[in-house]
Length: 311
Image (cartoon, rainbow, N blue to C red):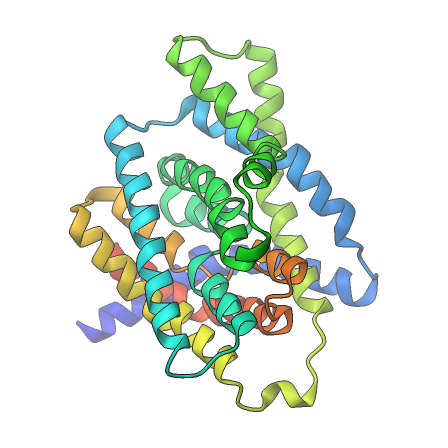
């Protein structure tokens, strides 16, 4: 039994994580030796690739109303439980307000877009990607509303939160796809092929960006010293969040491939957007950026086990 498990994990490692690591390594090499500037690539991803993959996937996605309601319920329940855990841990550890905000961001938001979508595609195929697309759209809305609230309560306003959501092109792509589907319409064949071509470029580009971002992080000696907020964030994201995701799935009685997809996406490393919010609102950005780096690196070891377990 144990030997079979290890063999399956190793197979998953080679089938899923090794293909993902190739563009990551390429991006890291370019970032380290060619000084690859990720800012224009991030703009390309935000305004060009992300809307394309969302539109392409949602237009043909085999998702039911039950899938959508389950995904929404899971997203909110998982968020509330992780927020409660992060908040309750902050009090006995006497974290300052900015450290508490950092812990909540690290605990609550995962890299489901740049890392999660390519991973799901390799691990669960096209059907898995279709299920994941709904979760990703919901996460985009949550990060730009509730995420902003978590990062800076004093600076939060509903008006600005709504405005930030509608600056995301992927949201308009989702609205267009859902609108066309509700009217039983489809994109013209030529347009659909063009969108599909753009969508195919999403995974290798975003994984290369991730590699370049990892290579650009400088690690000072003091960062190896024990810092409660950093180690607490690492513990919640890597060890506690899988248990929370499993509890949420059990409560909502989610089954099948949707169960596997939601579980894996909820166990992803810390979202890059968490670092952006931490930097913008001074929510201990140093702690958040280090958690992004180390949870991403460790995830290449942990995720194969989690994928095998949930399958």
